[in-house]
Amino acid sequence: MFDETNLPEDDDLEHEAITLETFVYCSRAADSIDAAEVGRIIEFSQARNVARGITGVLVFGSGVFFQWVEGPPAEVKDLISNLYHDQRHHDIVTLDRNIEKRERLYPHWEMEHVEADDIRSVLQEALETAEDAGNIAALKRILAHLASFDLPSLGRA
Ligand SMILES: Cc1cc2nc3c(=O)[nH]c(=O)nc-3n(C[C@H](O)[C@H](O)[C@H](O)COP(=O)(O)O)c2cc1C
Image (tube, rainbow, N blue to C red):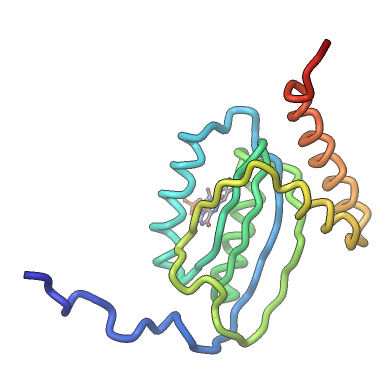
């Protein structure tokens, strides 16, 4: 029989305004990254994020990562430092980082993997509002990479 006692009574991650740090970034995946490696990153992250109270979403498409992370500031700070040392991606561009008291946007996602064939519009928008020279340069590199990635589909005569 289905045992309801194992279910969380009232999800304490939901509808509770707490102090959360948000970190949103995009980065360029290393050449070696394939679907299997993204799967391993997701699997590892889900287990680790549960333990750290981190939730969010990871988008991977055309060799580019886009990730939204939210959680306790100390934990998010640790994760950011790990991300910067991770050789599986580079050209990390911070799109947003802030600390505020609010409800979680993704209360049930330890790290949800979302497929995206084209995240160009998100990055283009980020480029239009970017002020930091380093970020502008990195976003341009990523967008140029996305453009070259699509070349074969343009068809060559
Ligand atoms: C695109 C990308 C997203 C990642 N997301 C997470 C994440 O959400 N949570 C996490 O713990 N590690 C994530 N990682 C892995 C971290 O960069 C790092 O490998 C891991 O936190 C190492 O932890 P440890 O050194 O304490 O074992 C991600 C890595 C990549 C390349």
